[in-house]
Length: 548
Image 1 (tube, helix red, strand yellow):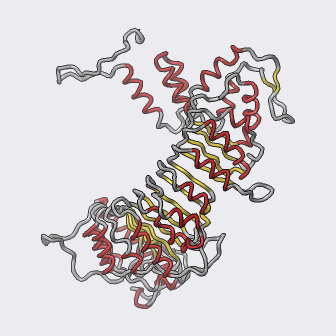
Image 2 (cartoon, one colour):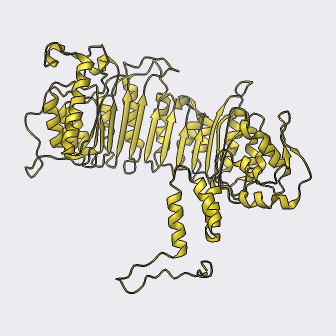
């Protein structure tokens, strides 16, 4: 009866009587059910049960169930074949047949293969299943409606073209080769041929067993052929490949995990690019392990981009100076689209793979001033091992320049010298409260040992109250009186419910400038122990105030 009640055309017009509740029709009920099921932690059992409940539920349930079956998809397909058709043999790459395969054997697996939209395979774990299905499956593609393909695993060196061909559907839009060997680039020609409409390519490769190979030519050919590419992630890029990437007219997001650039004056490739309209659609750029001076010289290549997010993590090098960071920030201010940039992340820090001391590299006041002309900035994250040369006056100017700011982070330096030169005070928090009404998270170190003498007021003479801030990370901020600080913060930010300090309760270090002055009671712990306890007390008092 349920099926007979549903016609091909459903009138969605509600009843004329507004006092009556419009009951859900069957298609609407189905949508409601599957919307609820899809957010479950383990929806597969529910979906399978729904598929067996009613013929109206069967198809949408199967579509949900098989759209992204997970890493065991190939096993599920093999299980759809008659029991006992294949016999396993650990000494062979392909499962053995116990009898000849009939065309009727493929009816059930073919039905489910047509529903798969996302396939994730770990090559080393699924090689046997893939080889078996690739050899015996009667169709050219295992999954003819596949949209997204993810292949990962260090043992993909021997992934052959015939096996990959069975996975490359003409409908593919997204291919991810994650943690694969660099020799996988030999398969690029087949990708170009079988997936010309590709919009997303993620290629995270490692050198092969025989060392690095020259992959620039093959990768460049691939990039020149994929005209619809919108999202691109590359493990390694040089100036030659960058020239091809820059000509992708539809590219919106670019991530480069290592960028090798020569000095711009020494690169004829980069000099030629400077006169072209490069990266016309780029909105997100993330670059890591790049020479900061070389990047500064080529940042003008994205001057026409409608860039929204810029994420830079330079290569830690001992020769870097504060002037280098300032020059880079100035180039950002000069060339990045001031009307579109919303997020700026800059992280210059030492790393266990690059044990270089960078405590001498600060972020200068001029570097901060270079970023003032981005009125749409919503997120700013800056990190260095040196100092942040910013005081309350400059912070007030910055807050005025960024009215749309939602998160602000000056990641606290772990060096004692940087902690002892904090120039910011609680006055800077007043600046954010006054000028940044959308700010929800603030992370920076400041001197909280002294409170402002008067409460800030707005233009109408009313006390400044900012109701958006809910998270405050105080870094290595010194503090003297937690009761007064808690009262100050609760009046300024009444919705503040989370305070986090970088000071460690278990620390034995003394990182305060004036320990005797900071400790309110004789015999109490000094330095980090004291500050950690005080900020914990502030958090408790704010939580109690919020609860009441």
